[in-house]
Every structure is written in structure tokens, then in C-alpha cells.
Length: 464
Image 1 (cartoon, rainbow, N blue to C red):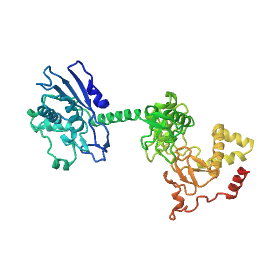
Image 2: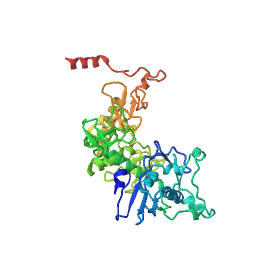
Image 3: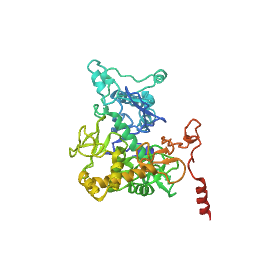
Image 4: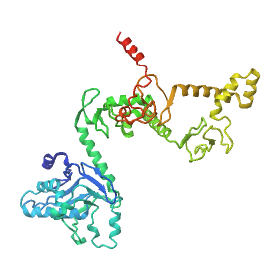
């Protein structure tokens, strides 16, 4: 039909016969249109598209000379009252243009003027959990069928322009049909439809990738949600694969310099295979649990399940294998008794073992166990080395060794910026402000402790 040629992609026409069809009309929304939930204090959700109005029509044999098209108007988000007002307005347009082809006039009105006619402005108010509140009011209010599930928050709009009002059930038009279960939650459906339409628009546009500098359709590109930077999927797939294989699941950020926007798990899943995504999901969960102070892991090598620890207790009970253990020494829970080898006694145990005679070493191995002694010696040496050469990340506790460079450090585990001197957390946006602030204890100490002569010698050797 010619309707599809005039209105393009705004709706779909499926003519069942030469005398009728269906038209889906996406209404034109003003910029920065928002949807809010009634009774919730929040800024609202920005939407660019709302589910379409659907106009089903049949053309009588004496159309357009005598009779108007027979139609049904349906919607997922408008109320019966609002659609009834639109139906009556369509009848008025036919009376004003009787004898003329009216279908295009109707479509233009619904598409461009319906929101203004109904007084619907941003923010659009919806009821959480469908029309439950409306159902409760039906018990006491005979006009409750005209209540809106969607409304407008604009008081000025009501003053400037009279609103179509329906107060009695008899005024509802039988040609107005609500195609959604009134008990269903409307907000997710509005947001899902808006997301789908945004993606369709994005897929049809052409973008230049900032990595390979090739122009590609949006369907072959990835857009980071927070910053809206766009790169082609081929480049981002390779980038994600390298980072996940290296275990850097916290580094799947936008490649734009100084941009901290991260890819969502759903975006990662689109670009990598199932095996790699399973590794990403596992490492992401692991890194999140490592940052939680009340989470430890079951010490059994065959288990390793994450265990939530109650505050002010040293007992952990694994939910998988039911093993009760001490969270300090990782041995079986021993109640109020001290740990067999406290961490602060490892050095003494090591020194005693290393200085003992052959007979003394054999006795200690029999008393504590050879494996326990070896572990104590190895852990003590490791702890000494870590204490001398490393510092713990103030966010996740990972041991960090500084080889050279300035005192602004980056944790290799959680990617947190911190100060090497005071171990304070630094801003991701401007980490160097810590060293430029006169009130900071590390003011003007960015290179404190750095041997600048060695640095100069290093760069001079590079130049030679």
C-alpha cells in the first residue's frame, strides 16, 4: 500500500486484503523525554521510543464517498480512556473531511499530534506493578475505569490546554483496546522496547572505529553504555580475549584515553566464545569476592567454595562440604583454643628449626609434622621478603612491589590507584591531585625516594 511508502519504517503495514490492513505508529517524542514511576523519588528514565499505537482498519465498499473506515485502535501503554479520546477525534476528522481519503490524515494526527492532544508531556508517569492501584480504586470509584496507568506530571500543560476527560464507563469507546495485561509491570516493557528501537537505529548507522580506522555499520560495532564511545566488534573481540586470557577481567574498559567506562557482561558475552566467557565470569566473581572482608574460601583443596563469615567470629562453615574451619589458621575449628602455629610465631619456628641439630630437627618434625615445618619455613621466608619489598594494596590487599617510577601506583589485581608513601586511595580521574594538594601529607612528593640519577642514566643509555 502507498501508506508504507509515505511513512517508511515508523510502522508496518500488513494488508490482509485489498480492503484493510494494520498500521503501527511510533509517536514522535520530544527530546529528553522521561518516564517516572508513580510514588518513587528518582530522576526517571530517558526514552526515545514508546510502543506503537496500532490502527487496524477495513475500508467499506462506499469509502470514501459515504462511509468512513471501520477501525480498532490498540496500545500497550495508553489507557482505554485516552484511546477513546483518540477514537472520537478520528471520528471528528472524518466529519470534517467527509468524502475525502481520510486514512493519511488519521495517521498524521496519531503520529504527530496525539501526545499534545492528550496532554501527555515529560515526565510520563507509570504505575509500578501494572494497574494494581487502579484495581483497588475500582471498589469505591465508579469512574475508575477512566483512570490512567500513564499520566503526565506537567501542571502547566493542564492550565494551558484543556485535557480530554472521561469520567463515566459509558463514555469509553469499544474500538479502544488495551493489548497488555493490566496486572503486568509496564515499566520494563517500555524500557525494553526503547532499548530495542535504539539498537535498531544504532545498527543502521555508520561509525568509524578508533582502533582500525575503518568505517562499519553499527551492527558490526560495540557502543560502551556509559561513555557512548564506539569501536568495531572485531577489534574489541581481540582486545577482550587478550585481557581475559591474562586474567585482567577488571580491565575491559573503553580504549579511549582516560575513559573509565567498562563493558557490561552482556556485551562481553556477545563477543567472546562460551569457554572464554565462563573464565571471565568466574574471575569477575572471584575478584568481587576477594574485595569482601567477610568472605573466605574453604581450605579443602577439593572444594574452595566461598564462605560468608559472621562478624566477630573465627569460625567458617562451608555450605558445600559442611567443613567447619578456623578462618585464621585454616585448620579444623578449634573453638577457644589457640591456633597450632600462629602467623606471628612462624619466624620463631623457622629460626628454631634452622638452628637445631639434626636430632632436634627430627624431633620437631615428629612434633609438628614435616610438612607443617616446611610450610612454616617457606611462608616465613616469603613473608619476610614481602615485608621488605612489597606493600599491600589498600583496596584488595594484594602485595605490590615497586620496581621504579613515581609514587602513584596501580594495583595489578583491582586496578586501583594508590599512593606508595601513605597507601591512600587516589582518584581515578586525577590521581596526581594527591601530590599537588598543599594540604596532602604527600604534597610535592611524587618522586620521593626515586633515584633520579639512575633514571637519567637509564634514559641516556637508551639514547646512546
